[in-house]
Length: 82
Image (cartoon, rainbow, N blue to C red):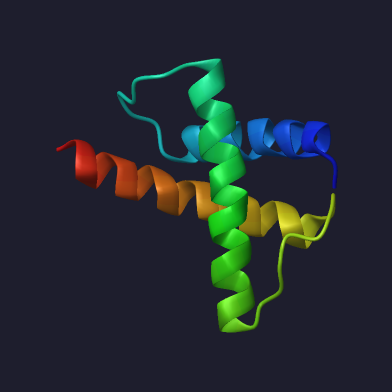
């Protein structure tokens, strides 16, 4: 996937993760993209390590892995911020 596709994919994954885990997290549009893109990377890494698959393009499996990765990243972020 190209960089623009990763940004769009990350924006969507980050927004879904923030909807699933609402809270007082600082940041707006840019932080949502960063959380989503890094979440996709983390989710892909964890999914590959556990044998579930990886983030390989715009498909349902990759999207679920990216959102789960973004949720994990939000949890880590919240723990570190406290």
